[in-house]
Length: 195
Image (tube, rainbow, N blue to C red; front, side, top):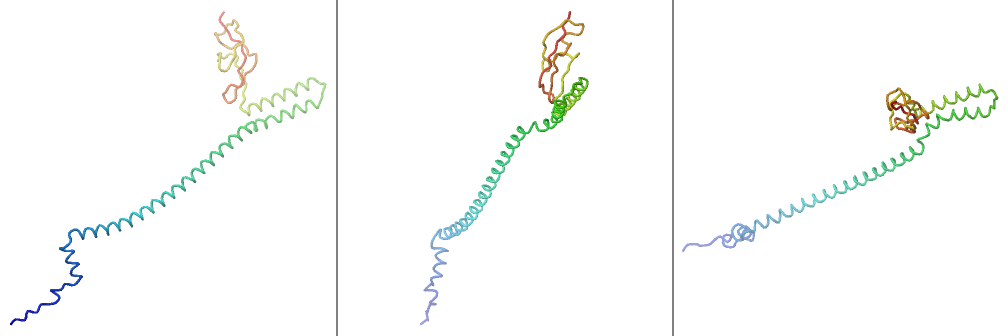
């Protein structure tokens, strides 16, 4: 009689063998589910990291936006202040040029001389001072005798027959003034017309 003793390990599989056998042959799709769960966990971890990175970037951009907005507001406010100061003190330099003229006029009034020649000389000097102050402030007289009539810079009071070419300024009744090429007051003139 043969000894037919079987190996106990071959007949009674261990639980580990059952798992491996079930995974290999028994349960279809068991391995892909495990892989999907593992991938989902890895994907979840990656998504959390990406979300945290995106939130940090959003916070950084919001901070930069708030700072830029505040800086823009400060620049706007400073600009408004500069414009207000420019309007308020625009005449400051011009006024400084006029102060010597005021001093001369006050000295003339205080002097009280009866000598008309000296008074005239003082007035002429003061007029030169005033003209110089105006020129420093870019206020220039327009005296267009002999020039072609320009309605933007001259105001015609009358037309007179003349040998000169038509529409030529014959006489200036009142000087005009320009400030930096902008008409402050047009010159009052008479203009020639053909005979």
